[in-house]
Image 1 (cartoon, rainbow, N blue to C red):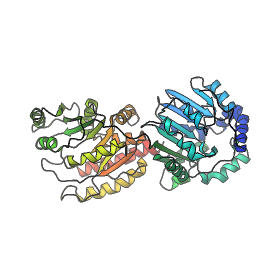
Image 2 (cartoon, one colour):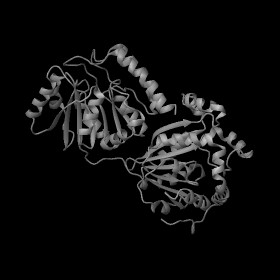
Image 3 (cartoon, rainbow, N blue to C red):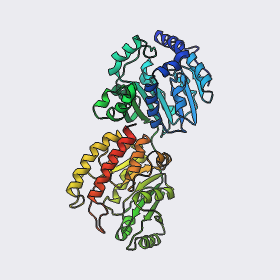
Image 4 (cartoon, one colour):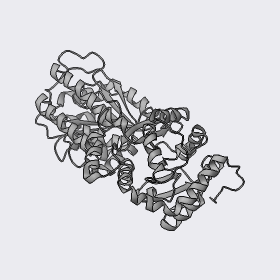
Length: 483
């Protein structure tokens, strides 16, 4: 791609923008140093949103400073200012930079996409036609690409104007002052689906460490966060979301579930042409492993695998099953069958049609069979659903429902970034949920009917697991909010 501004009739506003940015390009680094705390916080959060090693396109890249902080495997930046691009090429020769107006569709069409991440950081406010520019980005996306829009809160306009007047911030042209909801609406009009919204920086100055404490522990709180300076919106293209007849691996962790093995196979719908079932047996005392082998031999026409768990806990069993699975789509079905296998086609359709990338069952919608969930457990789950919806920035009503579905590609991304959370979850539910939130996956829930056991006894302790939920709340706040 060659640099392209020639032959394009720029508006008077665009001419003023180019002139201003060309003038401030030599002093861009000095402005960043003068407001180091603000930029450090912004870059740290962008690194949280964007794992290292991805292909990144930044539209409105300035001197390439943000791109350099994200450690992409492939980085491309475009900016309307020739002087900004000149500085970017000199400072960061490892990346590819072009002069260009991103509102010209032909310029975007020449880019060699798709990209894992497309960034518009403080760029949307400078565009002549935000909706059309967003619409023109789709061809640079695939079904796992994420568009990240970072922008100032319009509530801060008077303060920012004052800072500009007194020379406390880098001079800026007149912006389109868009609220976070305005940005969401524009994305919706352009056929992008919002996956996550975040608010950061209640205090953009260090102030002897006070800024760090407030931004980490107070700024993320409900209601207060709406007053923050920085808004972040993560979205995915709705034109690139469907899968074509994906294969499926159903993972069935089982411990002391001998009486449920045969019913699990007999009741499991044939979800697709290529279906495998993997039983992961976890040190049972009543012959579950032998029963799984018997069922496998009794159904030679089906692809059934039986594995013994090496470690302990459901989380370990799920990870072993996922590592052994070959399907495009990975499903977890608890061997107690309290969630009906007959509900799995709903999950398959939802993920194949791209309605979500992480599909979680919710037992808290339909009436339950008597004794399926005890009274205190039910109301504790309801309370925690509110808390986790806030922590995950996506509606979540039932974190402990065992039925979870995601693509292999999504799971591999979660597994690659697992070091961020560490080995904290013996049950596996939160390992996947927090990982999905960290990877900006579109999370949706499907209501399921929750029945009582027909064999065996529950392995859930209301007090032990209640304590676990409380620990997960604190852990999630630290790892997902208090950054």
